[in-house]
Image (cartoon, rainbow, N blue to C red; front, side, top):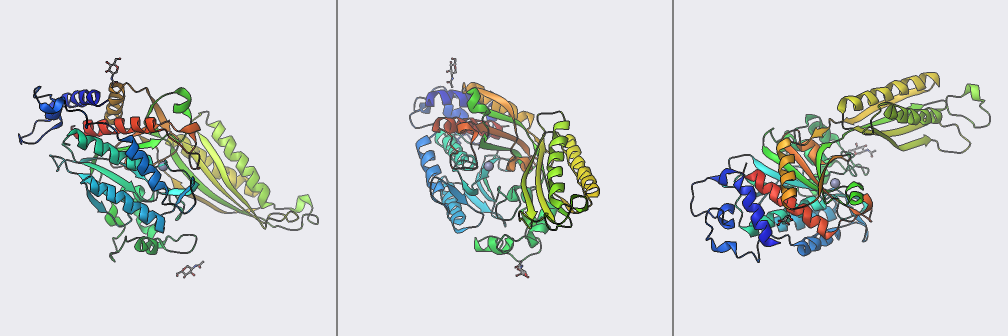
Length: 467
Ligand SMILES: *[C@@H]1O[C@H](CO)[C@@H](O)[C@H](O)[C@H]1NC(C)=O
Ligand SMILES: *[C@@H]1O[C@H](CO)[C@@H](O)[C@H](O)[C@H]1NC(C)=O
Ligand SMILES: [Zn+2]
C-alpha cells in the first residue's frame, strides 16, 4: 500500500504548483516523494511510510472505550465526569506524543496544532467529539478524533510538511446529555453570544452549574466576565474544517460504498410544548365538561406528522420523542401534558414553515379543547449547512485516487461541523457502520472502513494544507 500512497501524495502535490518555498533544507512532501528529484533515496524506502496503523488506532479506540461509567460493551462518558477527564488526558497524551502543540479553551475544547511552513495562513482543522450518551458505543465521534490523530501520524511518517498548519480539535459536549445543549463547544466557538450568556446560568440535573462542573475538570478557571466569549473564533480563522464520522445510518453499508462525502447537514429545530387543562376524575367528569391536556398533546403529535408530510419532501422529518402526562394515573384526566418535538430539513425555509405550522396547530388545538397552551418554546432552530465546493472536490479527488467507492450524501444527523460551517469552509467524510447502528453498544465500524476514512482524511488534509 505504501508505494501507492507515495504516488498519491505526488499527485496531490503536483496539483498545487509544487508548493514553492524558500528553505532548501526543508524536506517537503514533493521532495520526499521524488517529485522534484527522482533520485531521492527516500522514494524506494516506502516500508515505514504512509500507511494507516489500523492496529494501533483500533487499540486506542478500544482503550478509550474503557473510560466509561457503564461496563463494556456499553460506553457512557458524560461531560466533565471523572471518566471524561481521564479520556481527555489520554487524548492529550497522544497529541503530545505526536509532537503537536496543545491548547485548551475555557470550556474544554482541545486544539492540537502541527505548525505549517506558512504558519501565518489560516490552518486546516479536523476533529470531532469523545463524549458519549449513556449506554452507547465506542465509535461515534471517537473515529473523528483518534482517526484525525492517526491521519496526522500518517502524514508525519510520510515526511509530509504542511504549508498551512493542521489542527486536530476535540469539541466539548457534542451530546446534550448533561446541560441539555448539543454541540456546546462548537456552538460557542463560532461565536454564540446567546450561549455565552446562557452558560452562566446553566445547571445540570443535579443542580451543578456549568461553571462548577467545568472548574472541577480544570477549565474556566479565570474570573473575568468574558470567560465564555473568550472562546469565540473569528470567521476565517480556519481555511477549512473536516470531520470524519461514522454514518449513523445504513446507506453506505447497504450499497457497499466505502466513503460518504457529505454535501449538506440538515437543519434541526427542537420545541418544548406544555398544555394545562382542568384534570378531574376519570369517571365523574363527563366528556363535554373536560379540558383534557393529554388529548391536546395527542392531537398536536399527529399535527406534527401532518405538517411534516405536507412539505412533500422526504428530507422533512418530525419526531415526538417525549410525551408526558400529569398526574399520570389511569383514573385521572391529564391536567398537564408536556411534549418535545424534533424536526429537521435540509431546506431552512421549509423547516421553518413546519415549525410555524406546529405553532398554529398548538394554538388552535388549545382553543378548541379549552386548555391553556402554557408554553411553546423553540429551544433551538439552527440553519442547515452546506459543504464547501473546494472541500467536496478535494475529498472526491482523493477517494478516486484511492480507488475507493464513494457517494455524495446528506447528513441527517447533525455534528459539530454544522456549526464550524459558520466560520469556515466545511466538509465531512462518512464511513459505513454496522446496520447504521449508533448511540447503542452494537455500534461498530470495521477496521478496513476506518482505515479508508483515515486515508481520505489524511490526503484531503494534505491537499488543503497546500492550497
Ligand atoms: C440550585 O442551586 C442554587 C444555587 O446554589 C439554589 O439557589 C437553588 O435553589 C437550587 N435549586 C434547586 C432546584 O435545588
Ligand atoms: C487504482 O486502480 C488503478 C487501475 O486499476 C490502478 O492503476 C491504481 O494503482 C489503483 N490505485 C490504488 C490506490 O489502488
Ligand atoms: Zn457524533
